[in-house]
View 1: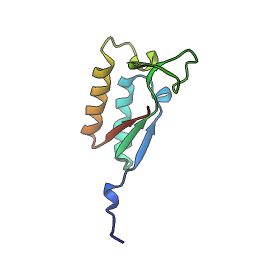
View 2 (view 1 turned 180 degrees about the vertical axis):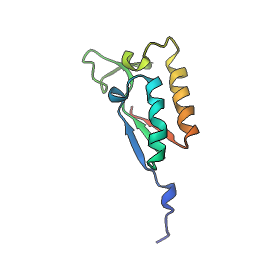
View 3 (view 1 turned 60 degrees about the horizontal axis):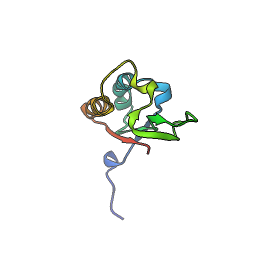
Length: 98
């Protein structure tokens, strides 16, 4: 059996958006996540919710949940892109829950 380099193995941190706040606040967690040795950040659904309000009952995949939009008037793609760029700057990759 070939030896797997464990530095390449995914070490995934779950950033739960209801606890982390707006996308702007998510960035403040990145230094800590990276310092703990994680190399991926997994984010639970952050899209605009349907009637139930559940993160998992998405109504619109192209809009952010108002809680994660914060006070920003910027497009969701801009806010998320900024977070992803910041994560890459800390050596982290980002995945999201659909």
